[in-house]
Amino acid sequence: MSTTPATAYPPLATGAGVDVDVAVIGGGIAGLSTAWELARAGRSVAVLEAGRIAEGVSGRTTAKVTALHGLVYARLRRTRGPEGARLYARSQQGAVERVAEVARLLDVDCELERRTAYTYVTEAAGRFAVREEVNAAEQAGLETTFTERTGLPFRVEAAVRLPGQAQFHPRKYLLALAEDLVARGGAVFEHTRVTRLHEGTPCRLGAENGAVVTARDVVVATHAPVFDRALLFSRLSPRRELVVTGAIPDGQDPGGMFLTEEGTRRSVRTAPLSDGRRLLIVTGESFAPGAADVEARFGRLAAWAREHFPGLEPGVRWATQDNDPTDTVPLIGPFHPRARHTWVATGFGGWGMSGGVAAGMLLAELIGGHRPPWAELYDPRRLWSTVREAPAFLRHQAGVARHFVADRLRPPGAEHVAGIAPGTGEVVRIDGRHCAVYRDEHGTAHALSARCTHLGCLVAFNAAERSWDCPCHGSRFATDGSVLQGPAVRPLEERDAGE
Image (cartoon, rainbow, N blue to C red; front, top):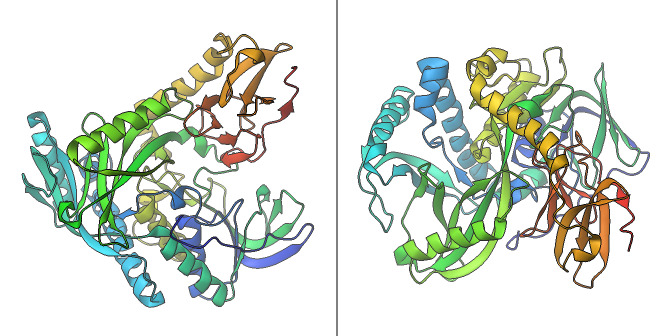
């Protein structure tokens, strides 16, 4: 965000109307990739973004573009069979190559670097899982090998190694996509929040300000789907992920992209800095939105980075959000069983760079009347896989139910608004209603309804990011109630703080 210019695409004017072949809701990597592929195929396209393009999850990614997604291939071989694992590998590696191809085609300097990806373990108990993953990924068509050596500055027990992967500057890439999309006759509308969808022939979209878009096809690429008719939110588990960074000498660059799913998840890569050093990017400390102690989690992640990379100069930190599908594979395709002209891309599980590009390629083919071999693998209508992996689905639903009921019974964090310190927030009862109250640094209390506008779960205050987060489906709101993250599309209602 700090090394690219801000965008300034106009909003769709109040009461205006637009008629296009395809309307794409969401200006992240999935939405922009889909829109660009369609425009390249000669279709008229409009992208509708509630905020600014490439500023949401895609603006806060660590931007690893790889087909090696932890230990996914052994799991896919068990649940989808060898052919399912092969199709997943083929489509994801195809996305890696597509990023490189598009960067060349648009002649964009997006800091694309070819790197080897590793999934490693540090304990002997993990060796078998690594060997199983190497075998499954190799059977799926990837050139994986087993190794005990990496460029990390600490010993690993074993690792899956996959060369020929990539990392890049996501905004430089996405802003170039948007620019070329407009040059091809497409349109980008920022600050245009879509709140209504009428499916028909054609489809009609209604924006918050009354603008209307008419389109033969509609793609919902909003990270978490903002329309509930498909109930896809019930098959997605939202997860926050923290990121810390710092500068290191070029000679300390471990020279790859590294991930461990062992214990506390850790991911490591570097990026070039203008002074010749490298920016170390470390992620981990995953937690559900609404969890407490986010500041402590940042502290643990920073301590891990300093321990393993002595002399690290602290840099900026941030958090991002992922949606994990309960049956492992992203949901890309028809929005629901009766959909004919509405499409969705969601559930990338932390691998949105390759997944978003793969989604763009797949959706462009489907909308064009073609059906690639991996279309069935990603089809959101695949209820058989949800049944097969029912324990994950049931755990997620049990967690939602627990929050919906227990959070209403839990004593408030502060008995009265007066007990809330400046710079903090608490859910309190005011006149018998749950209210989310934030007190700013000047001492003024700002009260909102604590009921998430998606399905009514109670929000919780995230002190590290100063936001109100919903633990059920991942919606996030600013302290003024405005929507930061869906699936909610309406702000939290204002309340009287009663002071």
